[in-house]
Image (cartoon, rainbow over all chains, first blue to last red):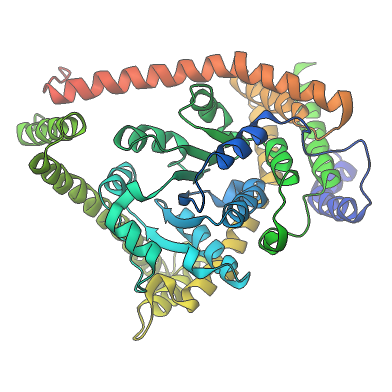
Length: 268
Length: 205
């Protein structure tokens, strides 16, 4: 490698960041689109939510991981806002430390967005991984000191209080663990999920087998679902800007170019 | 070395949990609940011990002037800040505003930034994987290349074609391999669990 190419290699990350920043500021172009207009997964999610009773009580298993959270964050926030717009009451539980940190941040964000606090319940962190999930089906200790009606219902009825379970996945304890450990122990409660694309091969069989009632598994599905929402004044609870497809495309093309060049150099 | 007490314990708890799943009985349910609670306590204890070991290790690093002193200071300061925020007199614990601020304003953004840097480091790792000239490395990078192309956010017929190709690849090649792996792992787990439950061990164990 000569001096010129060595300097280029060293400067490449900075050049990439500058390129991404320029692409972020550039106007949208018509031939780039993140959402799939006919996303069956998004339609399935909307149908599953429409089938819930009025003012549904929903258990949110919040266990994304920091590495992939950026991919699903907007969709997860949109789903939470959608559930609140349906007068839903949401109880958050996490089974991983990372998930707990993100759930705590999301609850604080919902608080700042003036979401109705009587519709939110923080069940907190449950250690023990799969054993924790099993314990959740036996008893839920809300751990909140206020005497809200939702807290009382959950403490009294346990997991039977909920009309649906939503798993925001990404960590080890994702939809698969919920299907394996929770679904056989409870009645006919729909299980919905939002997961990053890296979990798609794992989640796909459960969606095909209808053990998961609905799942948003790709950025396209998530974007299509977000486009379909009409949240009214609760739109303040979702992010004001959608992901820009141009910087995404640029990053992906850089990845393709780097991988392709390296692969070509080895193969040829 | 054989450990009959451990095997017996595993057999009893395994059968207890299995029976509790299949039979509705209040006494059985309470017994199974005790076993599950014990597992949770052990897991929580292990997590706390892990965190404590990390703290002790970093303090030792500083004391003996080895490793990364700046990293050690940051780890200890972070742990101290979180403990002080969550355990100080009058604190509401994990729901305390100071804890929530530490998590939302520091932990999550810093963690996300570090993972964002993975874009660059992953590409570097892929290039290094190819440098080893192994078939696995080439296959891995070729798979990543194809997957990235299939996920390009294009609209119109090109985008629809890529989405269809992605769906096909997921349903057939990726799906078949991944499901095969899952089924294989499940079978091995079942066989291993049965061997533990029946107290069967290999000759060299």
